[in-house]
Image (cartoon, rainbow, N blue to C red):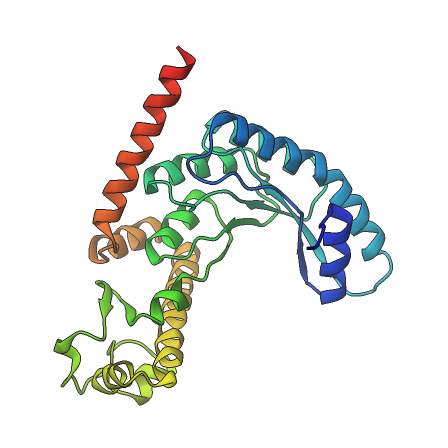
Length: 278
């Protein structure tokens, strides 16, 4: 067992040589009751000054440029999200991360909590949405004011043969790709699409060759890079909202049935919380 404190977390990340150090926080997952969500935010706020103090001492000992990001929590209550965002913004950190989202909640709930968090964050510091990486969430996150993302999703689904296309995710292990001599995506400039056919990638998955997972991951990561490049250009040209709507009109998000089940679960939990309050 290892005991991790704010001070210990800062020291470990300093030893790792992290360019961006993350404050130690507490996450209350989707489905946690109000008491758990409040306690997670309380501890996150109580630890943040300790993170900041230790980080500043460590940064003074090196000439390397390093940054500290505080993390907003607050669970799934908009007022708590705003309170946490304001607390992090006033703490003297170099950037503001938004945590505790994309943990099983419906997309519309994530969007509502994201909007609440961002409303309290400064515009002159980078805003980082943690654990979010589906293509549609990147477009909508940037529209909400997010600057940075991270997520394992593109490589995790790639290892199962799910590949991103402008129309949505496709399963390259499906039989229809067995004789497809064209690339996975004719417009993609990734190493996989420039050098291999969809049929060959299909074959690799069917044969359980390790190269399959690498080629699929390369494609998915490059797909997201291309989306970010498109967003950056459209922001500069003043056409971002037009480009976002164009992307969303063509791209079909995966797991619609799962999303419906998540919405039903959230509505049930909200009804139970309301009943307990009254």
